[in-house]
Image 1 (tube, one colour):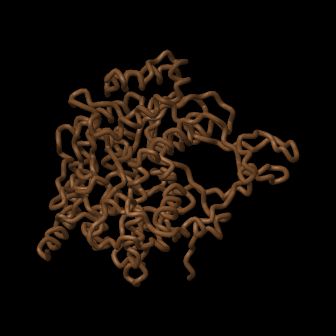
Image 2 (tube, one colour):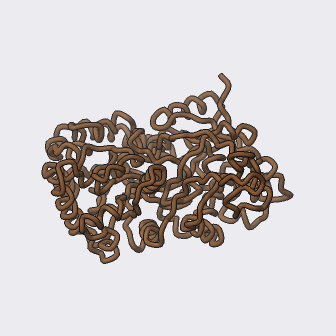
Image 3 (cartoon, rainbow, N blue to C red):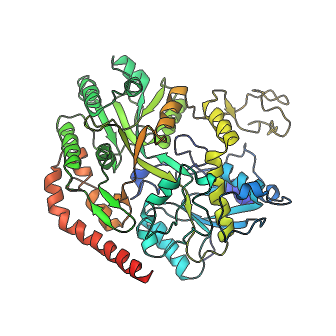
Length: 527
């Protein structure tokens, strides 16, 4: 069967997806964690490229004279200076060139490379497909990091260690070294994330807050008073408005992320061992608190699409992937002509904790075993880090996210006059036929939202928790989420007893973890 590749020549049929990770245009992935088994492997909602848009010629853009040595900072001994990236073949559940055009542009202009994507399903099917390609000697060069990559994928020798390709001690990776180390496997480093990103956050409509006479959660956050207690108090007041009012709902793993605010990982992969904290008293306290809030009627029944969650005005808080949830809510109000101003806050602080802890995610890529173009893959990884750290790029991206001016399609909807090519992109009507331009939805991040986003990726303001509950297999995940008897979803969405569920499943959980502990032990013996 011929593989499905998306190139510049076929972009008219390619998929467009929405932004994730606090509005970062470099990571346009739909953050629909509820539709997959793992939050980082989000299923993509696609739409055809609009005929009123222009198509980028990536191959033409990649026709450069040489690679500037400044773009090769942070590389290791196996990296060949001056070598063009060439074609980088990716396996992913969304098209990288289309959805991450900023990185594709960097790859082309700075490294003389192009990226083509073989589209596959997300979740466990993603790793099944990757395993087949590796076994057949047809490995892709790059794959998107997914939580099941660590420890599962690395333990199964699916990825290439990058210690000799990238220099963890170089200035490029300054500030990220501890994060890279947190993903080490027996002392080797397979994953160099470009940066830390948010996982779930709490999204809300400020209009609803004002009309109900409630304090704005962002104000409480900036006052260091956004806690479990103020969170619960707001929900109590909200649900008392009427029988259909819901204080909070979210996707799977929301309970884990609430428990992480205590500062404890539920499952901790240290690089040489796996620690099970499911019996930790802080975890128990968090889960009991959630179960009680559910029994009091404050919490809904689980996943609600953020594109519809706030339309009827009955939901107060949505716990969802920050950018997907925030931008989908904005877009739904844009399309329906509704009045709403959305803001975000982190999951509330545990009153017993000395600081805010956040269930964090990272963003980046890994190189599969057997990749034929490791250099090009490393260049793509460098693009991600450059995008996250280059002051000019960061400033331009920030300005773009906060820009409130309207966004139009490049071409006139009537006569197809091309405003961009004619250098008249500032016009709102066509000078050729007088037709009003067609406006696109554009997410806008206010100064307050940006302050929260900045804080949530600042290690001085948040303790980052990289919980490894998500890093194993579907059978393991099924114990944790998926219904009344699941260890995480049970308390928050059904009011089930966490203690009873944990005791009923603890030995089975340990048996799964022991299998991975054995893999780690055998791998260590081979070193």
